[in-house]
Amino acid sequence: MNATDKTLWLIDTTLRDGEQSPGVSFSPKDKIVIATLLAEAGMDELEAGIPAMGESERRDILALNQLSLPCRITSWCRALHKDLEWSADAGAASVHIGFPMSDIHLSVMEKTRESVLGDLSFLVTYARRYFDHVSVGAMDATRASEEFLHLFVTEARTAGAYRVRIADTVGLASPSTTAALIKGLVRIEPNLIYEFHGHNDLGMATANALTAAENGAGALSTTLNGLGERAGNAPTEEVVAALRFASTLSCNVNPARLTPACRYVAQVTKRPVHKNKPITGREVFDHESGIHGHAQLKNPLSFQPFLPEDVGHHPGRLVLGSHSGTATLTHLLGQAGIAVDRDHAGPLMEDIRRFARQKKAALSADDLVAIYHKTADASGVI
Image (cartoon, rainbow, N blue to C red; front, top):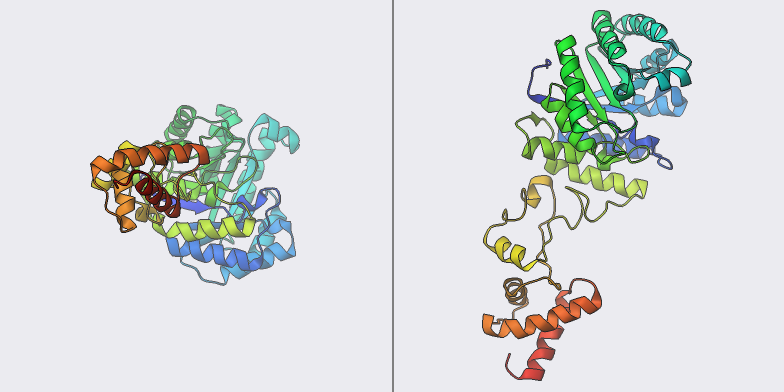
C-alpha cells in the first residue's frame, strides 16, 4: 500500500490501547479470541501489546505471533532500545515506537525536541535491522508545535520509518483541525503513510478518523466498542461502517463480521454496549414512531442508513408505544394471528397509547394481546 491508495489500512489496538482502560485486563485466552475474530473480519493489523509491561505480556504477544493469523501483529514500544529487544524476544516482525511531541509531554518525559529527533534517527535505523515494519508515533501531535511536527515526520522518513502515527492523545481535535493537520503533513512529506489515532474525549473520534482518511491519511487505528482511556478511542465498528456507507474510501474489514468481536469484548470487560450505541446497540434498528413504522413496512431503508444485516446486527423491530400508529398496530396484531381493520384500530390505539404512557415503556406482545381482548370485551365491536 502507498500513501495514495484509497483502501485504508486499519489497525485495531483493542489489545493495547483498549486494555489501558481502568479495570480492563484480557486473559491470554481473551487475547487469542479477540485477535482471531478481528483477523476473520479482515483486520489488516493488530497492535498486540506493550512488551515493556513484563514477561507475561511478552508471552501473550509471542502466542499471538505464533497463531500465524492473516494480519500483521505489531508491538508498541517506548523510545527505548530495550523495548525493541523485548519486542524481538516476543517474536514481533513489526514494531511501533512512540515519541513525545507536545511541550507538555516533552516536559513530563524529560525530553527536548533535539533529543527526540536524535532518538528517532537512532532507534528507527536500529529497528530496521531486526523488524520488517517500523512505524513511529507522534504522541499528543494535535497539541504539538507544527514546526516540530514537520521536523519529526521529515526525520522519520529520512531514517526509514514507513508510517507515522498522528495521535490525538487527549481527544481535543475537531474535523476541521484534523483536516488541516493531515493536509499540512501530506504537503511536507507526501510519500509517508500517515496513520490517525483518535481519542473520543469530545465525542468526535469517529468523525476525526474519517476526516483524516479523506484528507490523506492512509491508515487509522481504532478499538472495538471504542474501548480505551477516559472516553475511549474511535470505535472500530463505527469507523469501518463510516468508510463503507459515508465515504468514497474503503477498507478490507467486513463490518458484518465485527459484531461477534464487539460482543465478546463487551462480555469479557463487563462493559455492556449501550442500547443506542451506533452500529452495535441492540435497539438502533428499532422503530416506534407511527410515521417511521408505516414507512419501514414499505421500505426498510426509509428511516435507516443501511440494513441491520449489513453490520451483522439482528433484524430491527417495530415497537408499539405511545408514539406508534395504526400501521404498526395492525402489523403486530397480524403477527399474533389477529386481524383488525383500520376503522377498529383507531379506538384500540388510544388504549395502547394510554397504557404505554403509564408503563413508560414499549408494549410487549403479551401486553398488546391483553389490551386487544380487554378492548374487544368492553366494546363488543372488535
